[in-house]
Amino acid sequence: MDIVYRSIDPGSYQEAYAFNLFWEYSWRDSSAAYIADSEDERRAKTEALIANLSRADRKYHCLAAFVDGEMAGVISLDRMSIDKRPACHVQGLWVHPDHRGRGIARRLKQLSEDWAREMGSEFMDSNVRVDNPNMIALNEQLGYEVARLNFRKALR
Image (cartoon, rainbow, N blue to C red; front, side, top):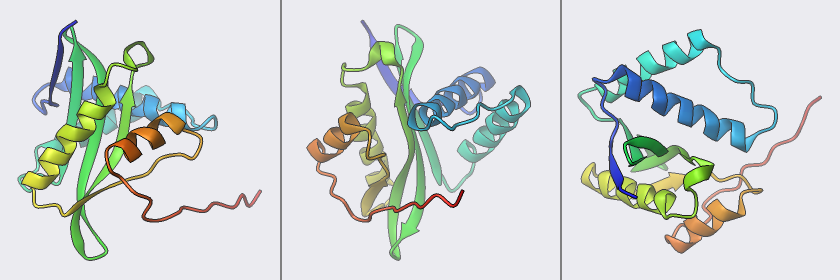
């Protein structure tokens, strides 16, 4: 099994589209209430992703793991200011169920940290659902600590 890790190519519509599908799957996995995107929404998000990845300021960065040439996992990053300090936020991380347990998520996070350092970020920021013990454990193993708690109250 050959695993290749690299940035998403904004010049490849097909690759950007596949990345967006993986990112959509990450939201589906995290919420039973998630409503799948329409084909028009997927096309619009793909075009927005290509525009974001083509920005001169390199605010956004997307990496993928390819197993034998097929996309197997993705991570989406956004540089921003958090607490008035330069930071990098993990917008989404998802590995296809057929490829979990092979260290792909760990490697994607490590490569993301390398990129964030190169971009001048002082720290990484990531949100994890409380019902995702595997991702909580991975973050703790990689040295992440709880910085904030996100509370939610249903209003209906």
